[in-house]
Structure formats: C-alpha cells, structure tokens
Image (cartoon, rainbow, N blue to C red):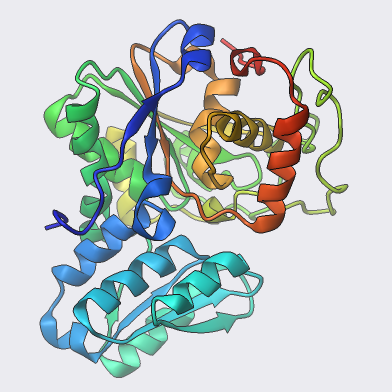
Length: 352
C-alpha cells in the first residue's frame, strides 16, 4: 500500500552513544520522510483505504502540524480537497508547509482537543472523511510499517525507542514487532510536561493530563538548561524562564489524553513509557545536529531518553527520529549550542 509513496528511510549508526551505552545504537531517519515526518505513512494509509465516496467529498484532519502535512500530501495524491484544523499558536513552519500541499487551514482557539472537535464536526456535517492523527486502526497500521522496515535493516534488533503523543506510532511499531519478533523491547518516550500516556499506563486507565503541568519532582530537573559535562555549554540557560504552567518544546507530542485504541494496544504491547525533562530535548538535538541530523524536539525524544534512561537499553537499539520540521528559532538555538559544545557526543550526560 505504501510502496512507491513512503520512503524506506535509512538507519545510521551513532558511534558515540554506542560506546557510551555499550551496545550498537542506530537512528531511524523518519525526519527524512516525505513531508518531514513519519505521519505520512498513517495518513496515506487511512486515505487510501477509505470509502471512495467519502474521500471524494474531502479529507478533514486536526493537527499541530506533522499529521496535517501527511493528510494534505495524501489528499493531493488522490486529487481531493483537504481541510485541516490547527490549534491556535501551531508551529508556523508546519502550517505553511501544510498550505503548500494545497490544504485549507483553519485555526481553532484552544489546544489539539479543540481542533479535533472542530474537525469531527466539520467532517460529520459534510459527509467527509475524518483522518484522526492517532486513534484509528488504519493510521496505526500505516505507522507500523516502520517496525517492519527495522526488522530488515537491523536484524538483531533488541530495543526500539519511540516518541509518544497520542500513541499511534508507538502502538503501530509495537504491533508490527510483536507479530514478527516478540522479544524486541519497545520503549515510549514523553516529555515531563506532556505525560498523559506514561501516567495512564501507570494508573492502568486513561487519564487526562494538563499539557504543561510538571510531574512531581520534575521541576528541579527540567528547566531547559542542558548539562554537557566539560563543555562551555554546561549550566548555560538556553530557554527563557518558564511561565507558571510551562509548555514542552516538543509540540508534536503535546497531547493531553491517550487515544482509546492506542492505549488499549500499548497496554498489551509496549514495555514501558518514560518521561524526559526539557533540557534532555535540547541535549538530544545538539547531539543530532553534530551528527548532521536536523531533528525537531519531538523527533529527538528517543535520543533524549537514551541520555536519561540508558538502563532501558537491551541489545542493539534503534531510536526513531520521527520528525524534522523544526521551528527556525529552535534550529538557530541548536546550531549555536552545537557550536560551543566541544566534548565528544558520547560524553553527553547518559544515565545508565
């Protein structure tokens, strides 16, 4: 279904992290996918398998950015109109690129949930096709093709780390791996400022977390100050002082509640979901920048987890770099930080 549409993205080894963690570490470069994100896979698969009549009436979605581009790409491929609802303040780079694919973009006051509600209402009123960003079996199946590629690319795969927002990617990858190689560990990663999936798995039920609220004890860890021992970057503030309710830099995973479908799948298939502080995202993006990889904060989440939760790694490990649609201001800051960090990438703060 995705042959000839989605790229079979490359995997690249990282010698520094491999040495630091004592096992081969690879990056799966989904940030090099068409539209700059893995989201193309699920969006295209949903549109391709939909009822042709509904598809012809138009495709509708809600997204902070990457899913929007995937849906717009799919709609353009099938020659049907696309309307995308985005939350107020969405990443302007992602919004502009969505429009370039020919989609109409509507901004909605509030967060992702408000955009989802507006999209669902618009789709229902016109009999249009609604493409949910994560809580849809066809979307999950499309994302799962990454797992199938990994089994071919890294035959002795032991652990996969996956960024988590609503859970479509982690549940799709886990389902694909469990079907072919059940012994592979699947670890999800979230920000401490958007921890709904991690908290829900611990509680055994879906919880709604206020996106921006810190987990207990996380405030002292995550104030946006990267710590790279031995470099001039250590201890240097790189983010403004947070507001009373700080928001994660990883806008692509700022979801307040897991999907019903994705939570049910993850409960059975995912080994663990961990959280990382905001500073870890910056450290990860610096590491990736120095490896020649331009990755957005949410896409760098698995690498942030390697820096903070190295104990989770068992055997050859892949970190899925899920997106590269980085805000220009963030990209500029990462470039500056990478220029002054003088130590080897393997010396970034890893916690075994």
